[in-house]
Amino acid sequence: MCRHKLAFKVLVPLVLLLGGCGRSEDIEAAKSLSKVGREADVVFEKIADDFYQSCLRAADYTPLKSSTTEGINQDRITAEKKCYENPQGEQSSLDSVNHEPTPKDASQALTNGNGVIINYLIALGQLASDDLINYDPQLNSIEDSLKQIPEIQTDVVGAGTAIAQFLFRVFSEQERRSTLKDAVLANDQNLTSYIDGFSNAINKGYSKGALESEKLAVDEYYRNYLGSIINTVNSDNVEGIGVVIRDKTIVELDREWKTTKSTLVEKQKIADFYVVILKEISQDHHTIKEMYQKDEKPSSTQIRKMVKNYVKKLDKLVEQSNKAFKDNVTPKEK
Image 1 (cartoon, rainbow, N blue to C red):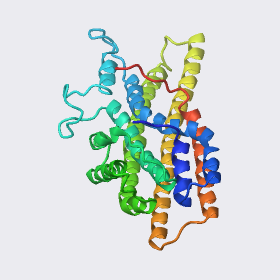
Image 2 (tube, rainbow, N blue to C red):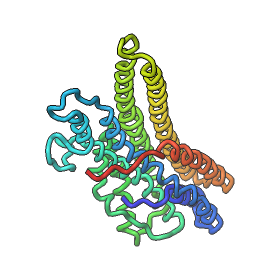
Image 3 (cartoon, helix red, strand yellow):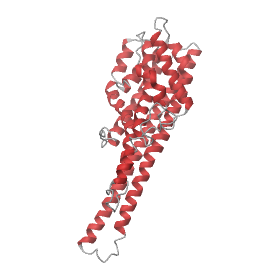
């Protein structure tokens, strides 16, 4: 799915959306936020990619075998393959009934799901500034992709698909120009439903799903590792320098355990923070719909206040994500 810079994509359309016109000062003010946007765009890419990487990391905590018959790391290899290979075989990823998405599939689906929201906001900005509507062809198959998002509900897939279909209609019928008001009134219910469901999927699938599973794997690994070392306390074979090394190892492993868990908790907070931003987009959209229904328009003061709020939160999110995901590496293609 085509994605540029998040804040530029989100904030520029919001300025235009709230103002209802393409005044140069509004557009330039939004463009000045692009520096924050360049980094903020990476945030959700990191969240989505980390869904897959979390599975790979959890696999790395699979205990090694004492027997070398199949290789001491065979269980780890098997666990890792489950992150990118469907055990049901080479079934079509479009078969939503028989195909269970792998974490790798789910990572891409999350990225595409986020793209529905971003593409809609872009379209609102284009309508507000009287530009021609652009359309991402990949939205044509968005329904199949959305079905692969972990914990996604059928009605949420329907809402996201409806938004994509609206974008296609506006794009293909531009001679019968839709207005910004038409778009907001037509899509408010679907956008609210979609953002609520997509946010819930991020929460259940990633924060309380993949990361919680990884926490359990981490705890089991360090608990067993430390336990085996501590059990040597009364061993007659450990004395002198061996005792010192053992105790130092215990302290270092305990510190490593806590640090690893702390990083996972921080990633959960980042995902929750991103959900907060999505929910505020939904709330602002609904507020504007209600104003249109009353034949009202928000003032410039309201516009600046809303945009300032987004900038502040995006800036904080960028800083946090740069720290939490700094050790992430793009896994080699499987």
